[in-house]
Length: 381
Ligand SMILES: [Mg+2]
Image 1 (cartoon, rainbow, N blue to C red):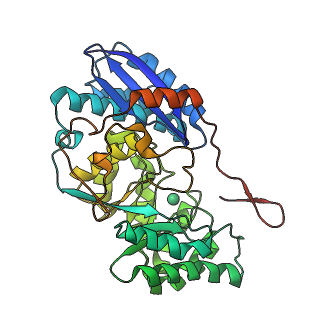
Image 2: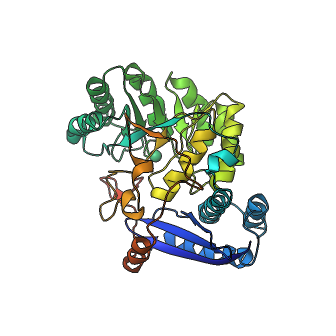
């Protein structure tokens, strides 16, 4: 079998899909994207496709090595995301070739369902209560929300109180049986994180995510020791090498994104690395159906998997939804906040190709919001 064609589709709300065709008629789908930087990823996929065309799609590991390392320069979100999407598509083809789901090729299932959480935003504290109630109503047992808005580098008492109030509200509405994660979104300085974490501990969040930007890995040991709250991070890390220092610092939960961190192949290796530290995998995934399907394949076969992010109903996705691009929503039907394992081949979904082609004609130019502090200076979003 040979790869005969590689196409990319820029689709609303802010995603990109890749379609890899073979001379045997098998098609694989992947989702290579960096939110807000989709165009450079598309260019990177086109460059990598030059190598893949005419080659055997079954040699996934060898292609991963060449795509990741063969250009001499390596790493970073754009290249790693391009490789990630192509890697997903190659696994999809291999699964379809043998008529089995990808998780069977990775060692077989270790669980029958995957717990997921819903995202409720949290940028508007007044809306948190209703949003939490809606997720409970939908059957979810865990949610995630932002812990704060833009925060000054040395927070005021009011900013600290605002963050604590969100956590207090979440715990009050959810009770003790459900969980919430609090995402600091890189908005919180190391000094503010040190102050906030011990104060938040009484509300027992499941985790605090990106307690600080990935720019400050040296502050992680202090932050781990600042409270009993498990720290989570990794959506802006791209290789297993980049996860080593956070693990050594005591970070409890790794959140690589299957569309940024080298795809299914690298996510498996990041999970194995985490296992040696007793750490858990909770993949980041505010993306589309292919990235979620690929994440689920890893979750079904990874022992130290904790919980899956997913984007259905996420507040950024205003023009299109995850289910717009599949012909059968069944693999994404939640029961009690979980998704059940299926034996469908490959990634386990059927992409609605006409819908994808039509959406690509519309395209998108999504960029993340730019925030400013009160004095006019740049603020982390
Ligand atoms: Mg996050």
